[in-house]
Image 1 (cartoon, rainbow, N blue to C red):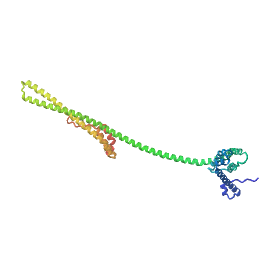
Image 2 (cartoon, rainbow, N blue to C red; image 1 turned 60 degrees about the vertical axis):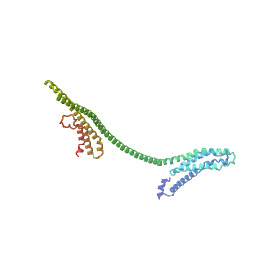
Image 3 (cartoon, rainbow, N blue to C red; image 1 turned 30 degrees about the horizontal axis):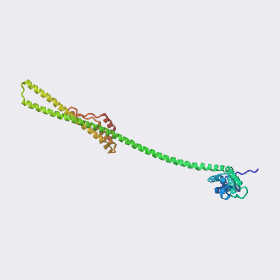
Image 4 (cartoon, helix red, strand yellow; image 1 turned 90 degrees about the vertical axis):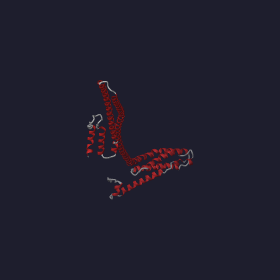
Length: 364
C-alpha cells in the first residue's frame, strides 16, 4: 500500500520547495473555483426579475408574472451571499454555490426562451411558474449554510468590534460628562454654601444691630419723658422758692410757734420738690446714657461687615470680630451708679471666648 502524503495549507505549500506540482495545482483549482463562484453570483445578481414576467409579448393569460416574486426571493439570496467574503468557504460549499447559480440561470433562460407558439402555452407557463416556486427549497438548501458561515464570521470580527468601539466611545463621553457635571455641581454647592454662610452672618449681624437700634429708640423716647418731668419739677421748685421768699419778707408771724410751723412746712415741701427734680434729672441722664451706648453698639455691628469685606487678612478679620463682640456684649456703666462711681464692669464670658478664638491671629 502506498502511503498518502499529508496535504499542506496553501501558505505552507507556497513556501515549501520540497512540495511538487499537485499541491500547487490543488491551490490553483481552489482559487479558480472561488473566482467561478464569484462570477456566477455576479451574473445571478444582475438578472432583472421584473422583465421575466413577459406580459407584453406573451399576453395577459400565458405569462410568467406569477413567477416574478419567486425570482426576486431567489435573487435576494444571491445578493445576500455576494455581500460577504466567500473566500473562507470550503471547496464543497463553493461548488454548491456554483450549482445553485446554474440552477437559477437555467430557470431564467427557460423563461426567456419560452415560445408562445408552442402548444398548450397556458399550461406550459403555469408549469414553469410552479417549477420556479419549487426551486426555492433546493437553491436555499445549497446557499443557506454558506450564508450562515460567512455571516457568522463577519459578525464575530466586524460587528462585535464595531459595537465594542462604539460602546467604549459612548462610555468615555458619558464619563467625561459625569465628571464635568459633578465638578460643576461641587463648585456650585461650595458657592451656595459660602453664600448661605455669608447671608447668615450678615443676617445675624443685621438682626443684632436692629435690636440695639430699637433699644436706643426706646431709651430716647423715655429720656424725653424724664426731661419733661425734670423741667416741670424744676419750674415748680423755682416758683415755690420764689413764693416762699416773697411771703417771708411780707408776712410777720404772730409768735414763735407760727414762725416754726411756717419754716418747717416750706423746707419740707421744697426738699420733696428738690429730691423729685434731682431724681428725674438722674433718670433723664441714665436714659440718654443708655441711648448713646445702644446707638454705639448698633453702629458698630452695622459697620462690621464693611470692615470684614474690606480686608483679606484673617488676623484683621479676627481683630474686627473681637472688637465688635466687645462693643456688643461688654458690660458698661448704665448711668444708675452712685455719683463718682466710674468702675467699669468686667468683660463678658462670650467676649473672652471670642478673644481666645482669635487671640493668636491678633497677637501676630
